[in-house]
Image (cartoon, rainbow, N blue to C red; front, top):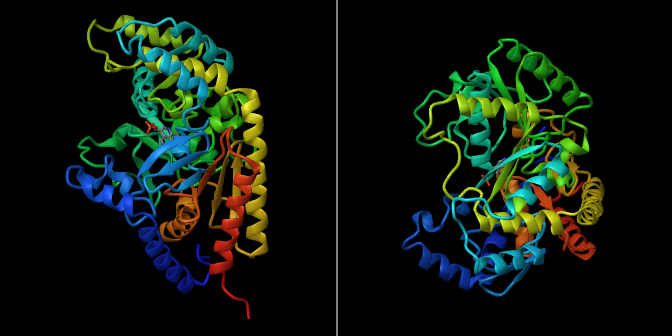
Length: 456
Ligand code: PMP
């Protein structure tokens, strides 16, 4: 089976060339700005990976609001990428915009708690069911700090992750299974420590492998997304998490659930919606409406162990937290976002539209007889180039096809529709409309009609 089965690859390639030319012709101002920026930006972009989109040169954004943004050439786009979840509740949601406008004249950072801190923590406790919280500036930082707390609290050094995971720029978890053997991810730059000494990696949905690793008795914690979302999407099999949680507990390890993407599942994330009981939980990106911040929470029991670890350590730098963490600006954004934007009502709207999107994609794929599948996790939908959904990271990796993805993404972009790069993820936000979804479906269908192998 190939990811290209059913497609006429020559037509795909001809289409890519035509779409690249079309993109260049449509976006003279973005081209000019990209050329100018390249004089002083390394790689020509403020973040090197901004070059890895499907476009011949970066698209420059002028402004974004709700489910839409406008580029430097004045084209309007419906945004199904939404900053890869950072803007999952829409760009510049009104309550957040107002809260940060209010805060903008009242100070940003003082290395002291603001009046919003208590209410934000109380709201996090209410919706995620964990009583104690801390803050960071990014989900990467939050994950890094949680690993540090948990290693300190348990006195164990090893962390277990699932093959193909991504939890941000947390060096420890850049370990993959290569032909069944743990190896440091080749792409990781400048890392000189041997990560495989303290990181164990197993396939998702493989209980015997998890049990064998835990049985060594040296795993501090399992760090996992409840559904893998960064290697395409991989759902847990029926009963997987129930059994996995039991094993983790039985072997004295802790479970950290990273809800940064799966917060698409509901106001309390996937774990709450599915009755999971993690020891620690992390959410970043959208928690402050896209303002840089992240949160992590602990159970009562873990909180006591963590406090004990801190009190038992000599005074001085803990390696946890950064100067601007929990700053009053981010705190104001989180309070407004949690209380007024990430509401039950907003989620209901998003779920309905995501279902319309997922059902529509399945229908179009079936009509074109392509061996592709669609997975939906709340407001998050992914299409993948295989008839059956992958069960683990290796299977998910095997059905990724960067060239095909980019062909689809560029085709959509030239028609005013943005989806997430590097895989095929589509998010809807409270401002997305049924018409927006219909437009996406229609363009997706046209792409397939233009590239499908003609049956003779
Ligand atoms: N956790 C998960 C599940 C993620 O997908 C990401 C980023 N894609 C992160 C953490 C890191 O987020 P950030 O880059 O904002 O630190």
